[in-house]
Length: 167
Image (cartoon, rainbow, N blue to C red):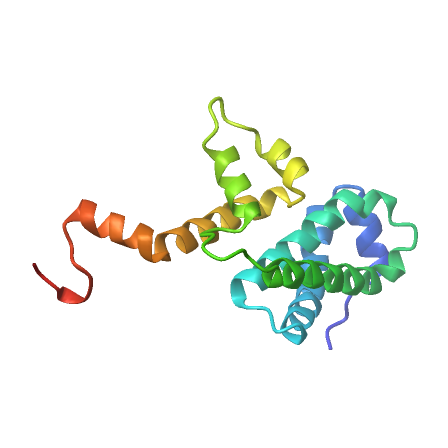
């Protein structure tokens, strides 16, 4: 094992704006976060969202962290909570015939609003980290595109036929 500086030193330096200390924390503890995501059996996209969320939460909470040596436990607990949040969102039941879950509908509506809604406001209103808005938007649009009715409209507009059918 490398001769790592103590976590306390890195946390204090990161609190004071030391980018190298922050990078060292991420390098040291990212495997912990990923391992917890894997224990929860999250897919890659969800694990990436949780990973990003945990680091964003730490950025917000770093100044308030009273016991720097407790950072590994804090990261583990926060990761578990975020994994649980992702799993709960994934297991919500959708009424029959609904193409998108309500959160996707709300997000897409806010993203196409005129004038544009700032990401900070979207984050606050929907309760998702700013860094997750783009990946979530992408997943919502992919889900929408894969719905049979939408796929048929797209095929009709482009002139393509599914499965090489002509007629």
